[in-house]
Image 1 (cartoon, one colour):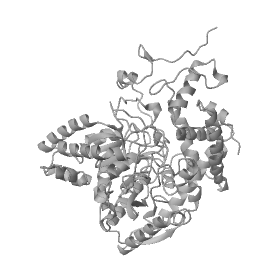
Image 2 (tube, each protein chain N blue to C red):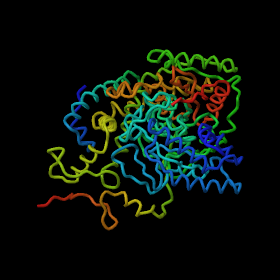
Image 3 (cartoon, rainbow over the protein chains, first blue to last red):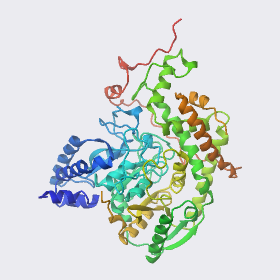
Image 4 (cartoon, rainbow over the protein chains, first blue to last red):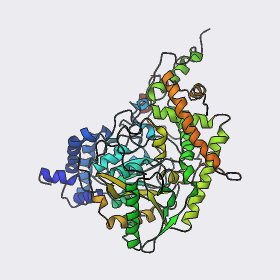
Length: 499
Length: 94
């Protein structure tokens, strides 16, 4: 790499293109990493995708990577700069979950996914912004700052992995990890015009992912194209004895699923998320996507999912219930914020320890986290457990049965990823319920534990529209193949923000 | 739908300002009211699903393994003394 023009150009490459550049010795990892930090310097004031940047450590890792490349020992990610959502533990590097309650937390260990990325040779450049504890759909619930959508700075990047999606879209990294509990990888991918994949529950270890709703959380990649998604999934998948919900199943080579051919593929289009409540521009893009699949030889059927109308309600019982339990660990004793003094309830004035719990949690959690702790505590409390929590678990069974029925007839299901394109910053903050309802297309997938990918499939002005492709459990290969075929026959993934 | 916000906050060990109490009472009754729509689903005889992928309990071998770096763990403690987490007084003075 000889001049600055090359440096500016190389940040816009995909991960696999950047990897090839390194392998062909056209650039070094130090040059590539330096170029990414120059891009961050240039654009981060406007986008604000990161909470923490680790430039010195990244350059050290880049120098190591260059040695490995020189020695011919490169792995699938060697030397490529990658970002991590700030709810995954990074040994020695601040991990805040975008919460005041973890403002100073330095993990003593790496999440399994971080170890795996490092083993594959990745250069970790920083930790991305998110909704506090991954609770939200806009990244506005971060206690740190608001992230702006690189496609339109007045709009949200989506959430909760909004920092990861924005960083990928703005060429501030070649790929990023996110986590998805109800759509938190796919919806920001849709809003920022990148590719976001939520693997099957159990495919990727959650060890070291700060828990939000343990039966729904799953880590996955945000990337510039489908090929990169397969490469990242290869790197992070696999059984881990440290996560008891990790499934001991063989990891196929997902790059082999990148086949540009959908002839005879049976695609179900979900009727319930193509009607009321879905923006016209989104519907139009999805209908055009269907035409492309049909032209490529796929057979598209309309599929009805009668339980979809109850999915958001079910989710907003189950997820807060699990969260209220998971977040009880933030008590001001072992890590993070502690606030003492002051009496918050007259009934507790004699108990110093109690007072510390109340005060620490009052000061440490933001409004959305408090709201969900309250909802979950209510739905698990005596007298309401059966009516809410148990009822929701039964509803979850019915939702899973809907998917089983659909997948007995089709290979993959498609729908919009979100009912709209990115909305304006501030537009929905005062109405939590309307924010929740916008997760309608992504939530059922988490409840059923299935894999799904969001890929760009259209534009409304400057703002991208996302197409969601859902697969059977552990059949990521089918959704990657469908997504890859669509991508190879369209240009939407090449539309990069002008910011 | 009426929700006793103070009672729930006490169960959750969560301090709330008067303003938060007022706001949450309104928002929680609207959110939980919406959540109640699942009552329209017929679920008699339906088994509950806690994990979508079949799970069984996993036990590791009952063998002592070294702890993570104790110093690094304790460094995160708001207050620490002699390798122990320190908390405010629990037992009241007579």
